[in-house]
Length: 202
Image (cartoon, rainbow, N blue to C red):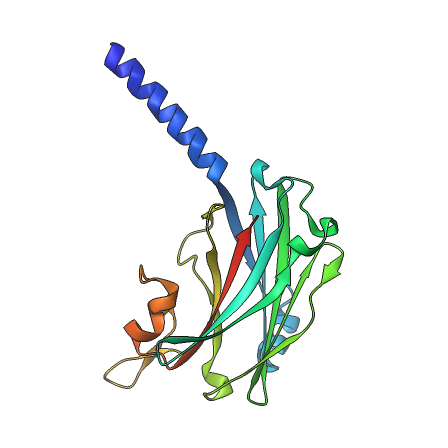
């Protein structure tokens, strides 16, 4: 009986520690308006909103970066937004939503982030493959939510080209629906060029 009680106490403590270190992340992709969604796809624009929820978000700031990989190697890392630069951007509740805009056009990727009462500067990156080969993907797979570890930097989005099979067909889902670490995707799936968007809470 004592062993059972100790086990219950251990599980309760473990769950409490886990909840203090993690927050829930959900997403909303594109537009609910079908015509607008079709237009954005036609124009090479991808939109995804990430929603973070957890009491331990209150008082934290966040840094969002984009990391570029070519031929399986990291070649660049750029800060898209640094909320630690001012207390104005500090989270003052148990939730925060960020909307990411990506535009693929004329051989370049344009990125901008919008949050509550702010938007980041537009950042541009050169594309080395056909612009129509790139697509925005997240790491939810078939899940409706993910737990984000507040103690580390988390990969949340990817702009990738497909994994090409021996028969010439390509697959995007195979790339992001895998246990392979984001920084290893290029080498594992033979992807020549891709980007990973990360977020770190401080």
